[in-house]
Figure 1 (cartoon, rainbow, N blue to C red):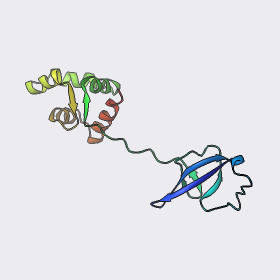
Figure 2 (figure 1 turned 120 degrees about the vertical axis):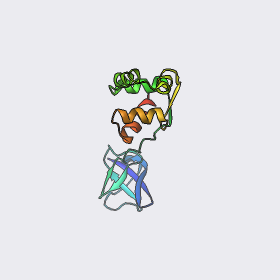
Figure 3 (figure 1 turned 90 degrees about the vertical axis):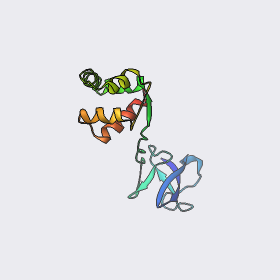
Figure 4 (figure 1 turned 90 degrees about the horizontal axis):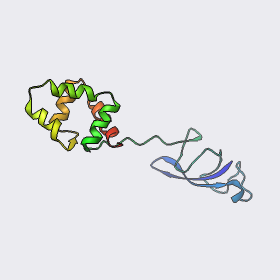
Length: 140
């Protein structure tokens, strides 16, 4: 067991201090010395929140969708998602020279560029799937 102290902001009670119980002599979990102090299990970490009388890990923050990724990042993400061959076949099969030039020569890919949007639409991809592609690409 550990000792935890919490801070409440915006209606959310969050763990801000964790100490071994031995560091708080005489701590009685049934009669804590002040509000927002608790005896907690060893798994509780800084930043955990109190919900329904127990402490839980906070929800993961929403991923920020990058607006620009490099050519290599973009292509590696397409490869990971098994889409690279589909995109290359689409580009090879089109007569749209602007699309072909953009695919061949662009050094960066922008999330809202017409090339990206048109290609995604041709492959039946949703906005959420495009966002996920750019989030993945940023990790490459």
